Structure formats: C-alpha cells, structure tokens
Length: 215
Ligand code: DX5
Ligand code: ZN
Image (cartoon, rainbow, N blue to C red; front, side, top):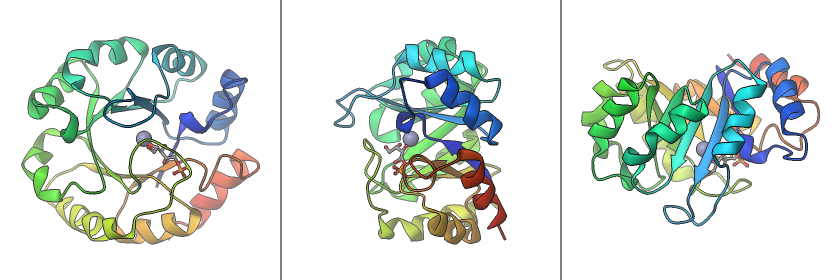
C-alpha cells in the first residue's frame, strides 16, 4: 500500500516542517493538487508551493493537474520538481500526446479521471500510463463525501491491471475504513487528506495504523 499525503491540506504557515514530519511518518509520495479555477472551481497549490515541498524532501512529488490544456504547461511542473504528473483526459484535447510528453520529460505519466468519466474513455491509453487515479469525489475540494457509484469503476480498473502494469490510485475522501475496503478491491495507493490524516493527530501514528490494517 502506498500513501500519498494531500499537500493542499497541510499547514502553509509551517510547510517545510509539515513536509519533514510527513516524510518521517513514512509518506511514499507528496500529492500536490494544482487547480486553475477553470477546470475545477478552486485554486490551490502553485509552482512556488511545489518548489517548497521539493526543497524539503527527497521523496517523489506527484503533481495532480486539475487545469485546462496541461500539455503546454508541463515544463513548469517538471522544472518545479514533479516526479509523477497526472492529467485529466477531460481537460486536454491531445491526451495521448500529453502522456507521451510527460514520459519524454523524464516523469511518470498519470491519468486522473473524474467520478463521471467511464473506464472506456481511457482504456486505450493504459499502455502509455504508469498511474491511473480514480477521483472518488468531485475534484476541487478536500473534506467531501465519498461517491459510492465509483466503486464498480475501481473494480474494473483493478481487473485491467492484469493486462497493463499501472498503479491504481484513489483520490478523495479516503478514510481508514474506505482504504481497507478499496485495498481489498485492488487499489494500490491512496491520497490522504482530511479523511484519514490531516487533523487526525500524529501523522506517524495515523499512517502506521493505516499500514497495519492492510490485509
Ligand atoms: C480533491 C483532492 C484530494 C482530496 C483531499 O480534489 O484532490 O486531495 O480530496 O482529501 P479528503 O477528501 O480526505 O479531504
Ligand atoms: Zn488530487
């Protein structure tokens, strides 16, 4: 099981200390949500925030681009220190071109799909992605409720991992109970926000508890 703290939920008055604590607590990667206020109705982390996280840890940064037309902005995030870049197929006219470009720039390629985007919309792209991230909330805000209708999609993607070696990531309202349930369905990694980590006490204890519950 891989655990990715969602850095939009961190304390920005003490960002470097937060990153150090999460790193020491065993975070596998740092999830950086980038939003442009157009593709989603919110604006969150910017390039300076990503550079600050980059400077505070040697662990991977996964950058979740919830922005329109990410293809022509990839270099900004590569230069800021991204290791994995997720794009939304709903936000880009040239999805395959963008995924290939991400890999050509030395990053891992990820596809993040909205709750209402079906598996069939991305199945043909699975040979050129390293990560598939299922949004189990409508993208844009932390603290929302899990959308139950996404469960069959997670099961379908878990089955497709037999044919394509991608990592299946869940992003949105991942509580300890949900993580246990989705791990059993075949999900590999979880974005941790307010449902399981931030505001839940000691980071190391929270992450250790999540790992202990893994079957
Ligand atoms: C949603 C964000 C996530 C996540 C935050 O757009 O991408 O980071 O929802 O975690 P929760 O949902 O647990 O507050
Ligand atoms: Zn995200």
